[in-house]
Image 1 (tube, one colour):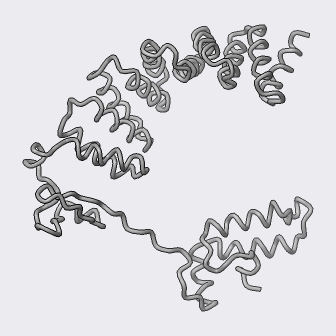
Image 2 (image 1 turned 180 degrees about the vertical axis):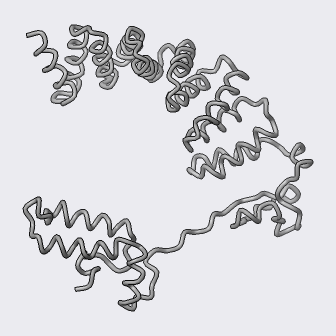
Image 3 (image 1 turned 135 degrees about the horizontal axis):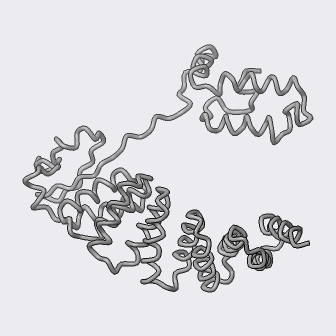
Length: 307
């Protein structure tokens, strides 16, 4: 048998498929010697995977087998849709390097605006296109559209907010923080801007700033359970356990069936050297999820300490 037959995969299978099948054969099918399987079978599977599991070795092996097909289709080139400002025609451009020089296929006008033209463009079109691309998960292209909208109208808090959301999705937290701060300064009474500022600061491990932003968000939405849960989490990691207990208690009161808030409340009491409060919280969590190993672990630990 060749290596493909040995791993029971099609020669056109992708590397990811080969990897998954290898794991199934070696572990889930219990062929590994440590799991009671046959050592010769495991050796044969490992030998096959060592070759066709590596793209370079696989390519050489395919040539030896006279396999001329490409087992992985090349990625499709990115498509950029540029609207002509003169005739409104939608033009597709496949190469990003060509975007600055691209011209309309109908009227032959240059599609990408120059710096002088930029000020005269409407800001709503790039924002709407950015929203569409964001919903489709095309973050790089969405980011460029939001940046264009924000340049055209820098005082628009919504544009800066969505620019921040795009940076957040791309995990560029420093830039996301800047955009959310700008949005919050332009519209200080917005819950959404403060909440996402807190989210970003929390992700960037700037916990004191995150707690402050969540406190501010809670002023605008005192009934929003996730805000109090995240506020409690920020205070917990800051080791300000009294404030954490207050926040998680508020979250539990707003949503009595919130299992995670109950667990965090128990942890906060436990870290604050309040075994009675911790035991009460973990018992409530255990009622919500009977048999939950996390809650049972702390209940047993607390019972043992009090015995």
